[in-house]
Image 1 (cartoon, rainbow, N blue to C red):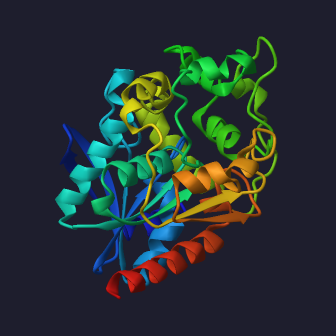
Image 2 (cartoon, rainbow, N blue to C red):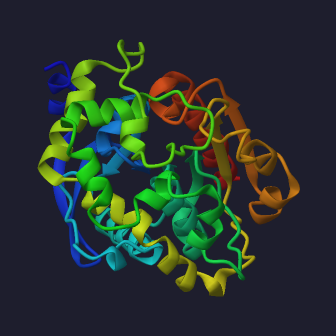
Length: 327
């Protein structure tokens, strides 16, 4: 398998943190720790390009499987997947590695974890690079799932809510096909299936692979989800309303750590859902005053699709803020 030579160059360990065991991949040595946080539906392997790039430039790259994913523990209850749980896991990881501060890079749910680590514990974060998922204000009067009702039952997050529903739908396909459907779709609109259709049925299976990913890469993901299942990852979505309840004390709070936000211009919902206007507007800049926004040509999984560009953006950000911290 093509991925194995690279995988052999990465050290693997399990770390006890916040009451669970987390699997961690690590590469490189150096004074600066970089915490790389994946999203749905991926694992630490999503960062293989960035790990090699950063390690070759003197950074210590650490990429965990987030709780519920890969070889990390997967608690059964959706209530164990709240943002305070995710941040607690990361605080424990940083303590384990003995670093007072780290650079944090996150994509999708990993970006959400990075945003709230930066909000709750700015003392631990030298700088944050968030991809695809911007920091969004909490609506004090409307629960998250209530706000999604106008999108109907076909909206993917709505379909992910009922325990077992998405799992049964995914099970109609082999794991490799599920990965192809979830990772390789090119839909620019919000992901909403037609009436009486599950989102996994709505997403097409591409006949050919794009140049940025191989069959072997997809098989790495497929093999891991075949071992772990999808319930843990889907529980992130099932905890969204609980997050809304828990995060009330931080309404309107600003994230003040240095931040770079990277998104693809073909991200689903980038224009249709207002993401482009939001990240270029005043509300986002007010909530994250020290943010630099970068829009690349690409889709949801921009860290793989435009791996070198993302690596360069990350490194430029690290160099800028490493120098600033020494002044």
